[in-house]
Image (cartoon, rainbow, N blue to C red; front, side, top):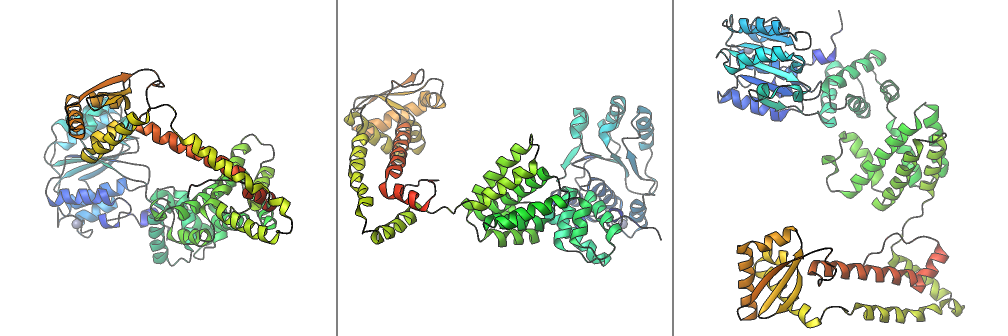
Length: 544
Ligand SMILES: [Zn+2]
């Protein structure tokens, strides 16, 4: 008995079996149930995602003896004919080999005749973008006045190549790439049906090779089965589909995260002996670290990573022992090494150096913890007081900060009134207040306010709007308990001469504060000493 390829044997025969295109199925089924079926459909999407299968299911659902129904019965003679491809009323045409105008003319002439024994004459034209311009014109003539008994289903991977006149006459459905998890689930079902022993990891390797295409995944599965029979080993799959064994990625990443230089370099040896391309392997390792980082950084990584459940669990187990910062610092080193590999004569050396560096990274300690440690040291080192003379210098640092904090340019009174006015507006009319935060108080007095905005800015045009301006006037009068003139002016250039807006002021205050903090931390005698004693670097400074 001849072998039927899996893609054919397990071709979906109902909308329910169609994997990963639920949005299409639901719309088509609704259309059938509410009797609002279009004359022409356009199914677009990558290869092997279910376009032709959907076209056949739709044709059956429309022509089924029990129908039109949301699902075909698949047992009546009409359904069976369509499944076998022997129906005289459902015609599948390959756009790639019937590109000429004559083919379409023939189709046009044929479409005039009623279906021989079904409800509709249905034309499924695959790769419809391959038709010639004249053929499209002939097709357009039918689409303009389609006979009631005719339906068209066009399928294409390249909808942009279709004339707009055709596109506008079709109901369009965009098929998605099928997610890895869904492909794995389908492969698992098929493996069960076929009595095949295979791990989820191996199924994921096959699905990844399919890259979102169910058909490609199934052909890959065919190849694997042809080689392995019904007992499939992970190693064999890895070799066959040419993907890096995920265990190797897991082992190598564990080695560098645990600081095991020996295991890291041995891992590179294995990579080389398996004949993997070093740069490609590095890219896979980058993807692996990225997965770990995402898992440690977001509450729902499954929504972001296209991974099979088993892989996700494995990554979770690995990630839980490591801080996101630790993963990120190593990822940065790896990315740098990968970019250098493009022109390198010895990519293996680059990978080894990067892995050694990654394995030798010291853990980051929060400054607070460092200070505590150093304090403990301080107590025990009380016998050598000269080491700790430095703390006396701490006081002047604080003094200089408070001196720098005093505003130098603006009269305190004017800016104080403006700030309170904007706060008042933010409370009463948040949208208006938010605009004012971007304005420079060119003049601020209870009877007259002049506000500057950058020339041509969104804020300027918004404030010049008479309604908004009126709102500001009313708010100002209410705030000052007297009529207040409000003027809006454009500030040209970079606006350096104008008083700062509150937004700028806040940003400047924050920057200044961070600069001071940075300086303070760098100069802090305890920290200086702790860096010396414990080794390390300042990676990040967070205001508490
Ligand atoms: Zn039927």
